[in-house]
Length: 463
Image (cartoon, rainbow, N blue to C red; front, top):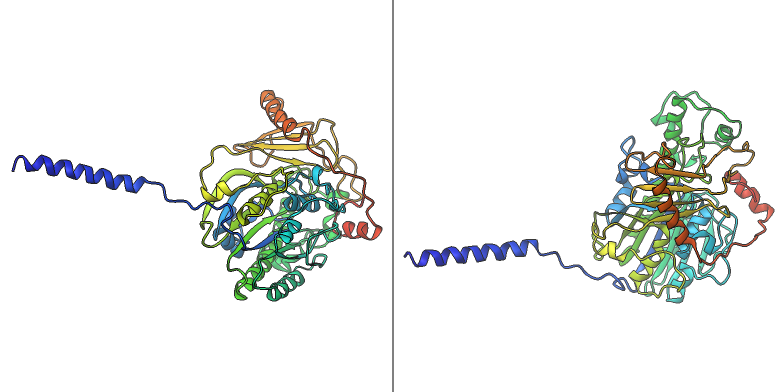
């Protein structure tokens, strides 16, 4: 009996070690490159949607986004996605090309794609996809590669209806690529209807969902009281809720029609909104701050991409194109600034430090770079933008160097550039390396008078 006991004891230890080994073994991960070959693609982008006003990004003041939150939870959500410009046409062009604005040439609202430039619809169409785009903004940008293209000029409900009608008619034997861009939470925030009055009853101040009420805040200027800012937030939150309803209607309609099977869904925004947080500015085109550059981003593909995971690393909107092409097994163009996020989709939560993210500002020398929690706004020529018609000079001053530690100062209130010259130099070097030698396709483009009026009506500066 004494001889048997040590043998049993050793056997138990070996069994326990084997069990522990099984418990700690990492789960098998399926390689995703090419795994969605032949799948459909839905790209849903919402104009002027701040990430920090969605419940899935921590917003608790109002229930703004239950449908969008559910969509983001159905796949992998990127916590720190950065736009390449706080302006619709340049930003969306970066999504469709994987290039920075100076390289795709659509560096201002009203500009169009160069004819020979590879874009996502062209690449997928050449790979056999049926392509349809239904947009509320960026209508006249020389879009190419679409079998069907429609633009409503801000009527989101019409875009959703047209998109669902198109999806119901596509050939089920061939994959489709559907892009829907909603006007969303864009000023003057009319997508919220009367929701602002319900969330903030009794308001008697100067603000409302009309440009004639919002623009004077910046052009006159009219100082806002804390009560006014509270109502501004309600106007914006109402528009986010309206956008959530319309986004849900699109996705639910596609699902009911059986059009979301074997489908990758990408949800994002072009940019955010200032909402009086810097320089008493309400809108977005002027902004170089996280209020306007931080956007939501999520990828879902049932059965391929795990649900509910989060990626903390900083990524860029230019990463969407190479990621999607990797998933569906379509070759990427030789000229690419973005990087595929497939490694993050395969192993969310891993991947180390991550890469820096960058933005440009039209034809100016203003750039931003974000690495880890450090953000540099670099304006070496001291350029002062004019980005709302009839605004007074220097209405949105940007320093030559602005440095922020977002871990301690997420609102970008305290400029640390004078106290941290080494960090400024480090980030400025990243900017220099990133943009050195990139092909520049910016050219003078004459914007038609009719388009100038349309841009002006949306609150953009007419070129």
